[in-house]
Length: 186
Image (cartoon, rainbow, N blue to C red; front, top):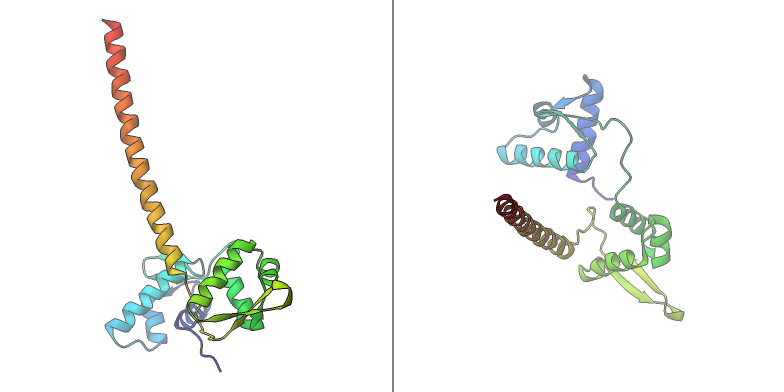
């Protein structure tokens, strides 16, 4: 039997306390309800609450107070949908993921390749060249594609560097235009 993740435990307890209270639960109340005893455990709780809020599963009402998300829920993350589908079915094809998670063929293939590299899944060749992926190592938490995250982070840093250089060029051109306009006036 699978155990519930720590994040899910914190989410459930926060929502329970918020429902019983005035729509919000303080970090201290959540900490007490989860029997947190050390500073390290409390820090882990605070980090988990912050992650849940940034994932859109909780809403930060004020400093140290969290509650349920109000308004339309944002659609589930495509990776989470694929992961839940894969864990439920234990065997999937690219077409399964494309149809049920509404992702492109390339994205589904990239995600499955990452799972194969992390030894969470194995590809089984089928007649006709179609692949079937089988779950071989069922982890509770969805594996994260760190290589892609690093690549995207590097792309964003390069984009920021290029943007700052373009801003500097724009400023220099404005200065040149100003100088030209003063020369024309003389």
